[in-house]
Image (tube, rainbow, N blue to C red; front, side, top):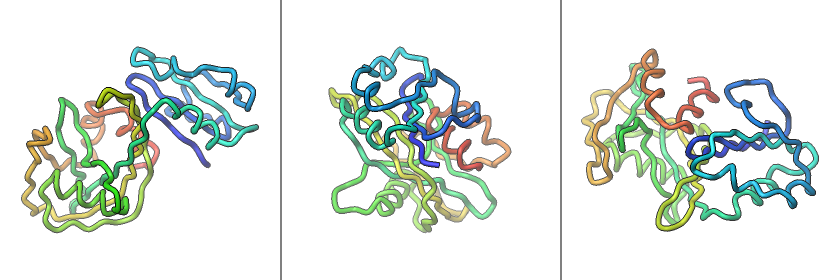
Length: 207
């Protein structure tokens, strides 16, 4: 089912065709959206840094793309890509930056494919020499304030593989303090100290 989930600082805005009953995704105010409501309603308060209220826009009478374009107009759109890296033991690679556990990723550069961006950024941020890229997993979206503007970043995530024998070198100039292989049974602890959009990747893709 087609659906967009945009994570703000403390809340999320969900665009969906149907009202699903998954409480992990669909907690919040539910509004049936159509063209008239879209053009007459100011949704900016849901993108405020102090907003904790989730919003669900059910788009049965209007295309999700039309609603997304309307909501994203105030933002500078940014493309990025990254990887969920797994070793032969089934452990996943996380990095510690800005006081949170995160996944390696970075900005798309003109002329690159998103797959190339994802692989390049993981190599740069983690110092991996032999990295294999696998299937596309999903896109995630979140907002933030940077460079004197509000940005909306769409990150394309790919499955990747490397050996646990690789020497990991955190890119300290990018603020990365630590790299750690995490066992799947320890994921909940790590994700409790990560960002909502990162946690959502693991929830929706059943890692």
